[in-house]
Image (cartoon, rainbow, N blue to C red; front, side, top):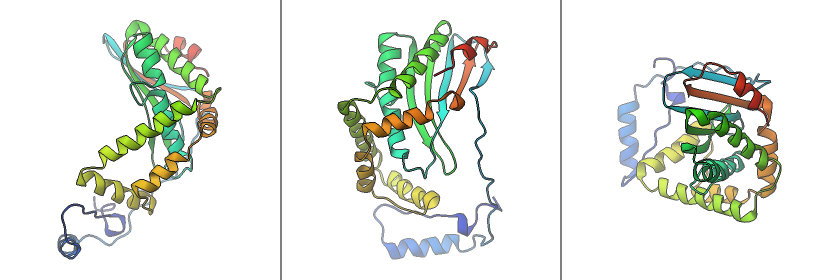
Length: 246
């Protein structure tokens, strides 16, 4: 608290039915005594993964929860919007590839979803699923099959458009409340020192092409970036080491 919660490390955002002069006056009143010392710097992240990695937590359960994902792009990467679209196509909505294949067609998952996370120094794309214990290997193999498939063939234009519309529609709904709006703008200023409007982000999303999706998939879906974590009644990693390949 003493080292990091300081003036140079702080953004105050205000949204709602306000007057600027009153808001500024109150901010000055309540934050005037905040420390002006410099915060500690954060060590640089250096990726060192060279092969698939595994993390198992043994637990006697009837259902296994797993995360299967890859190291990917950070907050400042020019392809981060395309990466987001890729995650939607794979498992971000009920008509996505993994939802249809793993849950609807095979019926082996209680839930399955794919999402990506971007931080200032690193990022990831991860598929999460809850699966009956006897179907875990099958679920992992199916997820990997879809990762490989999307890195070999371009997605149809119609599928890309549907994913873009979903992302933009979801953003529009999420940003309706004032607290979400202030978080949206203040977080950009805090992490990127740059603020893009909703329309400007839509424009970047609209520019994503099927070729972008293909190139990103080929880049991130490689053995050296694969990671599998699961919670369930498993101790032996050998069966998974055999199938964790792309």
